[in-house]
Length: 307
Ligand code: GZL
Image 1 (tube, rainbow, N blue to C red):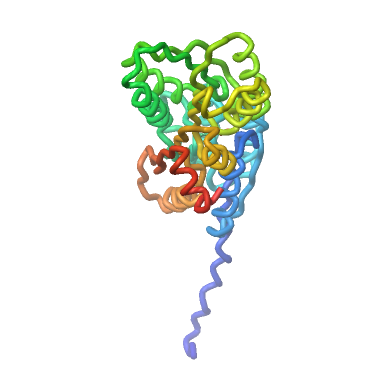
Image 2: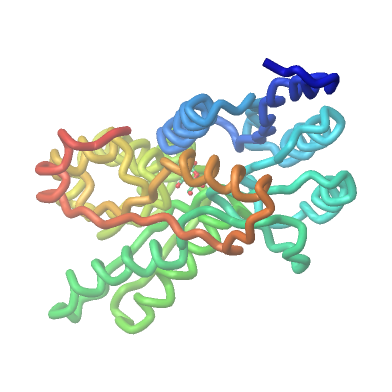
């Protein structure tokens, strides 16, 4: 028993829950849905209070959400920037408020890298290179001209810029591979279908479609079939992401090659939140692991896919 006169120390206040403010891009694709679920499940598992917003793919909505989190004095802010540019002002406001910022999925082009602690996401240029390498290999013995149409992701977004750059960097070694049309489908099925319909009207002989995500490829497949053509046969299709519906289409031979883009970033994000709040140094760049799948691979892997 405590015989002395000293009083027991006041009970430390119950550990205040860590609050994470997350400003999500939107709900534009199967990839985004899986990414959101990963963040919400991982925040719960980590015991964090998650404040979550959906910007409907509009930068001004993401900026508004970040300002709200600053006013609410959250412990950490994380977001997936819908486009690369235009973030310095609001990120400086977060820095002045002493709230650390973590980037997930997409990057910003801010020169001042002190504005965020780390960027957790895929190497989109490498994803574009993987798509290009498979195509160069497919046509390595052919001299015929190969007409390629490209459905780009959201204009100004890191995945759209980098997947385009990586693909072009690799196919330029094969002059017979020609991108005859390239336009944004904004990562959605609806827009992907609409733009593919326009491509089919404007070009009589399309050999390959390179889509920056499965959702646009799936929209394009509808347009291709409505035009009486066979996707995966009359038009070779390469896509990026590897969401369930993409894998189903690949297992049916409608998509020939899928470059995986892993949306399950939640666990790595929560680890980074803990490390930042513990004052640990964390790497400026954390690259997610991901693979590639032919139609054959997709048929085999389909049962194991988590999203
Ligand atoms: C990539 C991610 C992209 C996906 C699309 O990390 O930002 O946004 O490839 C999603 O499906 O809409």
